[in-house]
Image (cartoon, rainbow, N blue to C red):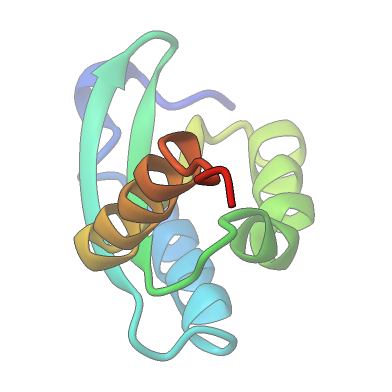
Length: 107
């Protein structure tokens, strides 16, 4: 049974699945912060997991199998999007800027 778009955030099954995914992520990344909302491309509930890591693939590995199971087996349109903290993003941008403009002086 698929959840109607307008009922997604209030559906107890959706709320339970979101809680489960949050617990799963927090079991590996204790400082994770979550933002949950609805969006329409595709229709569903989107949870942003803000995690203090360099590589969000590490976070995805924790939840991807369960998220797909929730989507397919339970028919719940829940999508998790892991993102780095603003500090990690700024540090990565600074490293990229420095490496891009690095040059050697002739010696």
